[in-house]
Length: 233
Image (cartoon, rainbow, N blue to C red; front, side):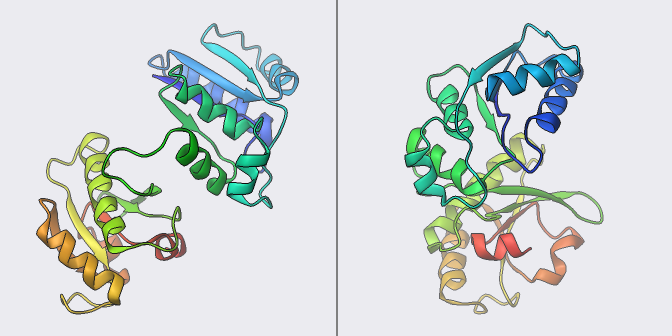
């Protein structure tokens, strides 16, 4: 795998991110290339501290950083040489398979939407968070990418969550549940009630509504909700 890392993101910037990158390279030989994106002088300084000259590392210089106080879409449009934007560019031109950023979530989503677009049939991206239960783990989607969602978006989250659960977490037939304020089919607001109908009519292994208090009792492998609810959870 080839990865582009936003080396300037997060609360602690290059020191922790470069340290983590070095640890990952030493532990995972399947990483064939790691692009460290950001201020090249700062990145090189951190690499020297770890005495790392791994040939799999390429540094991509970026002169700007998206701050946590920046507005996502504005930052992506105005800070075209930000580390987040440049990291996404590495994937766009086919040099990397994935982007990793601990920085501004909204900017990462916005940059990906503008530069990479979504897969066919997917209108909006969803953030997937893998959370533990008493027995296993489950995928929660959306964890905050879109606070205002439509019913069809929740259906798409169910599809994406199921694919992730199958291919990454290795669940054969992941069960899908919809967050609502009651388990009965008719419970919920207009968004969840319409999404319920769509999920039920789909080919997904949909198990119905789930109340928040049951989330960590291992009821399903994929939990679907809008980004507002998911971020609160």
